[in-house]
Image: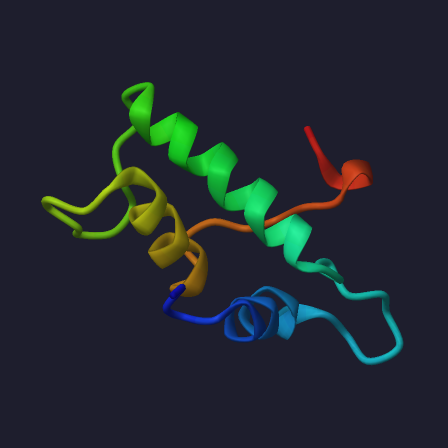
Length: 79
């Protein structure tokens, strides 16, 4: 089971959205894609942004997203 839950992760990611704006994340798929992309970056050698010695890359990526160390941006915001 995923801890925190998808609902909790979606709430954290969408917490900075102004009232009336479209949420950044509208489905579990977006959470899965973002965490898997970050996990691949960690596997490729990037340093984790949270302390997680011994954790698997996906667990670290989920923890980073939950603690707002990484952001999910829309296609129009990508650099």
